[in-house]
Image 1 (cartoon, rainbow, N blue to C red):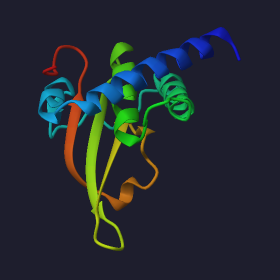
Image 2 (image 1 turned 135 degrees about the vertical axis):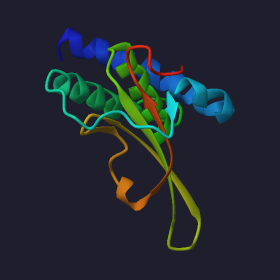
Image 3 (image 1 turned 60 degrees about the vertical axis):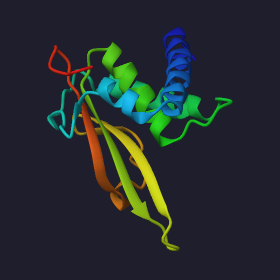
Image 4 (image 1 turned 90 degrees about the horizontal axis):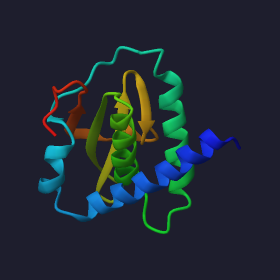
Length: 143
């Protein structure tokens, strides 16, 4: 593993920890930092970001298996959003709900940048979007 990859993994571990912390505080306090409520960023691909998006996605998925705290969909989405924001890359965080076979309410979160899903794409089609936050770069986001 090269040094750049190791640094990215350490960074993703840090942001997963931050994501876990954000999940532990009331959502009403976190929501304003996530971007523009009920808006989306562009679906247009940016080939210049494709490699970075892939690297961030991979690092989050790998490190989420090694945290000593719960690092499921919302924690991963928070972490990836913060990592992309640091790199001046826009993203949209989606929150969805669904019901399982027994009628229990399920929740899921996923993150998209351009046409690419960074976290949570597995099973997202089963969920109805109930919230979304556009983290736009360049002073257009409120957070």
